[in-house]
Image (tube, rainbow, N blue to C red; front, side, top):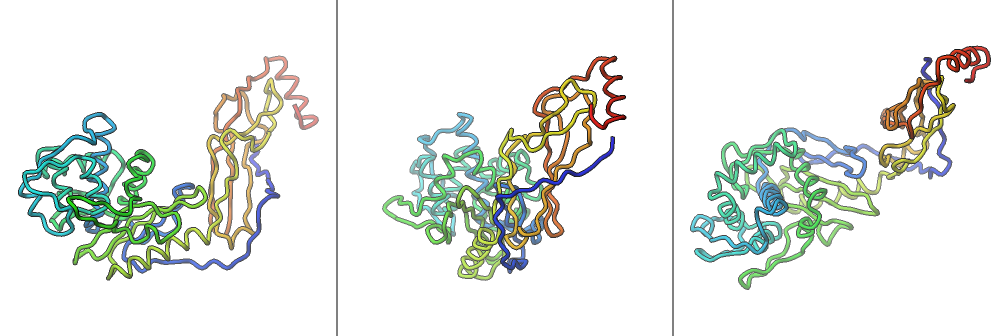
Length: 374
């Protein structure tokens, strides 16, 4: 069957011609993704191993979230504070040795206050030791698709063989947002008080950048200042991860700059909703002469505003489409092109179309060859 491209026009598209310049982060490693469409806007050394510092704690609490979901852990469960946890330096929740603290308080002490002591209490309470808990972190990492990470502690304190990548950190953030929305809300809490000590959330964008609702900062002298953050505006969510900056001020400025660029320079377009008819094509020897091609899921794409004017949207099929056709079978592609970028989306059959019987097929084939339609 001959292959051809059917051009399909979108008359409702808003044309904007503002100039869009490519943007690069000043961070040694950076990743900015559009979670709604799955597109990557900035990718700079995202698979390079780096020390994740306190951004490690996203995995620490993720292990706890998973256990709560499975019924293996509860928010009101209490864990004893060991001397190791109590003596831990760096950022603290200020737990007291030999006292018991609830899992719910520990989660807030880790997420909001970035408590190293709270991280150890949670790890020891769940697994018996921080070393055993690290194994659970790594197992969880494999389960969610981390490729460049290895955790040897729960707090992110400097340690040999403790590393991650900004891509893996973004995956942890994405998994948390999608699978644990009820716990992800804790990341948006601006402060938390424990034992009479009130501490603000360390996220520099929280309350200072529209739509920001998480996640975590990190710092060590060797790794520099890092950040994993997420913001949602008008139903569109971005995730940003970077590491290796020189100061907390620079971290805040860079996080703000990249997030604003991601939201302001791209237009998010919902081309088709799930099960919406995209195109109707002829069938070859089918009991039905036409078959509708539909979108198997919502088709989203964030397009640079500067490229909207030259964007082309086509449907690619084999014409006519050979029968029999099964419902849900991939029978075409939606192709969206702009600049040098091409995105392809599967289109599926709306229903099953059987092939005509033998005699009807012979007649239809002859008719098609003579007149171009069956």
